[in-house]
Image (cartoon, rainbow, N blue to C red):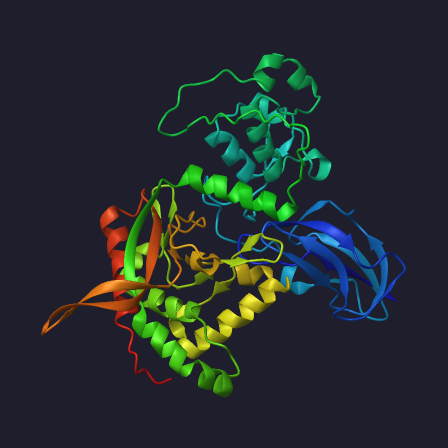
Length: 445
């Protein structure tokens, strides 16, 4: 008999830790190879961890609700043969890009030790970065009650503390270092003047009235809320609008959709057509396909288009079409349909919702004519497409102008004004509209 160490596997770009939601197997249970052992949740997606080997679960090393680092041993499985082993794919820490200060919501794994204070309480680089950007003193950081292993302060702990601090209800850890600080400093910080590097936002005090229903956010909604607030705090948003005539696209799709489904076994929606046009536009304006790391511009080689999708729960998820510039329209259609179907059934993997370099969101699917989307960090721009409507339009002909009914839609392009100026942001959405309007109504696939 031998023992196998089950490790928490890598779960996509920038995912450094996961929360154990549920142990599917208990100590003493038999496990088949590739059978699920536990369910985990990251700040991106929920997923299962299967066992690479068959055997008996001897011991679980973490409890439900614990936050565990990628690569940590989470369980011991007794096997019939072989030596003590661990999954080679995750035996050593996996290096990922360093977290972008003030942008990344997940911790990056590095080979350097965790940062600690004089009292030997450990803080991850991400927590230290957030504390520095928010002006927290070491004493105040030490006061935060941690929910991680050994009382470690997690990303959510410090974000919740900052939110509560603004409302004057911050919860702190009962340690001697905290007791020495004046209580007023912890519960009601002295207001400071707003500067260009930090703006203090006052949150309203909410009174629950008779008959009101209080609904606690689910985990995903909390993460979305944190991500949206962070994005608006990090990036100065500007939105440019363009109206596009998509009559050729509407007529072409109506003409070929039945034959396309019969031939390819797939329904063709407008989304793949929009993505194809976006890829062409990004190639024309590659400086929109970037991220900002302090004063460094990271120009992305790959064009990975995020596709915002609404879940049955009402939450939002953004699966990513990787290397969309290397696919034709049929290939994009197949990937879009597959990701959309699995998103609705909560079957996406962490890797399939990470690595996006530009995002498309369809507000028209809800009947909205336009919107002002929030940038999906660490990207610098996002495109919203509105509802397609029949509208009267002036058509110029050699014989004079005329009024005709055309299919039109509004395009809304939000971009990070730190790196994308109005000229680039405006030209980008105009070129996108040009590609849509120039679509060949006689195109053959």
